[in-house]
Amino acid sequence: MYKLLNAGFSRLIKNKIFWGIVVITVIIALGLVFNRISSSGFFENELEPVLTNYIYFIGFFIAIFTSLFVGTEYSDGAIRNKIVVGHTRKNIYLSNLIISISVGLFIEFVYLILVMIIGIPTLGGLKIPIDRFLFILLDMIFIVIAYSSIFNFITLMCSDITIATVICIIAFIGMFVVSEFVVSPIANDKKYYSNYVTNENGEVIETQKRLNPNYVGDFAKQVYKNILYIIPSGQAFQIQSTMSNLSFENDRYMTDTDIKLAWIYSLGLIIVINGIGIYFFNRKDLK
Amino acid sequence: MKYILETTNLEKRYKNFKAIDSLNMHIPKGSIYGLIGKNGAGKTTLIRLICALQKPTNGYYSIYGIKNIDKQIINVRKRIGAIIETPSVHIEMTARENLMEQSKIIGVPSYDGVDELLKLVGLSQTGKKKVHDFSLGMKQRLGIAIALVGNPDFLILDEPINGLDPQGIIDIREIILKLNKENGITFLISSHYLDELSKVATHYGFINKGKMIQEISKEKLEQNCKKRIEIKVSNIKECVKYLEQNNIPYEVISNEIINIYQKINISELAISLSERDCIINEFREKEETLENYYINLIGGGDNV
Image (cartoon, rainbow over all chains, first blue to last red; front, top):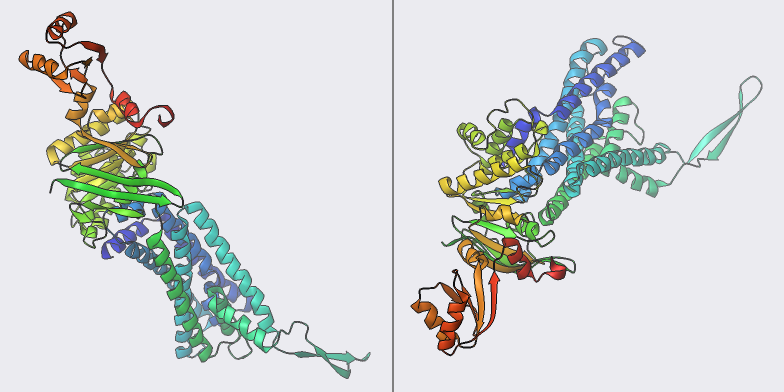
């Protein structure tokens, strides 16, 4: 395994896609901080939403990187070469996974550090309690590992770099769309809403209680919430929502218990995806 | 240990199609084993099985006497290098970087041998040129160099001269012969370029429809293909006696047929045999190329 990682990381350092993603990450970090400053001025806004903004779309970059980096191993015959000289398929699978996770964490931390370096002096320090921030940070790490696991699985099952890249991007978009879809009913947390009837002077003369047509019921809401927590992008949505509304606890706000639940869901997803991946990669007929 | 690689009733099935069918193969140590078969005969599938890219449906193979189901096979594989269909090279790297990458994969502690390998395959002058700018022949030679990292003593080359120009073919041939003679490396080379293979191979395996049709040494094959006179006689014993007495090289093929490997005076032979109560019923001059031999072996017709 050490030999594979040594070879993989030395190839990574020379990889243009990796450095391209790092540069884009830096640009995004700078752009988001300056956008926050320009929209509300120095020390007028919270730093927290900017800190977690990148977790929204980090999956896209992990999808691109993993499919192209690991896919190249297939197209160049490197995987074949590793098997021929006696490396086990499990080690090959795991070494690619570790490289993908490392890249995901590296770009996430580049973003976080950059935002903190520029953001703290311009927007102010963290208002969220540090232990709670660390809870969320750990969940972000789990999200990165989950994304890497999914895209590493797809790429190693596909063997064709082009198809793998397309499927990884579609998978990311699909997870994003599903998250968006399930977020909406969760956000509609009231069964009834009030309809106010006003007179000519704008005074409320009657309050009508109307059934919320978007309300899906408690059971369905729980199901949607579970789906949201299983999908890495869903957790990213929740984290962003939580960090954007630090003092406002609605159904999309993650309590400490919710965050711990998110860890468990991520961990489960990571174990299942990689377990299935290693099982099938071991049995796959390679060319 | 006599054989570096042995397969026993090896089988690979894809649904209802048998790509490899109860195949037995024996590659002697130090040999250059030419695996001959037309496209789709099962050559590449067989190589994929041996290289662990695919798993056999039935049967087994042994490398250096270690069976593929033995966990020790992982260690044995470190003594193998292979090029399967296309060379495994990183096209965005230089030749040197590719060899250094392979050294890391294998766990070779230093890069001391890299320059020597580049020199061996004639790529020491490529410098910073990336592999995507290499010709096919250069990529193939780099593939061999990569396969040689870690000093393996068994190299598997699948169709190594496919698509190469004449100079490229000569280069690969010279490298193979040099490595075999100077380093004692055993080769398994699959190809459908029979003439080219005949210039390097010491042993042959003829494969068709996933089955091993025949394994034969170069000497035996040359003897089989040699210019000869085939005669069908009425009394084989008398004919053999005559040939022995006159020191004429021959081979008894059946109860009636004898091959004679020397130019002879037919009239004289016919008279001499007739005096011994032996009549020549049929007479034929024969000479086969490797190609003809292969075609005859697999039955010609639809099999060609």
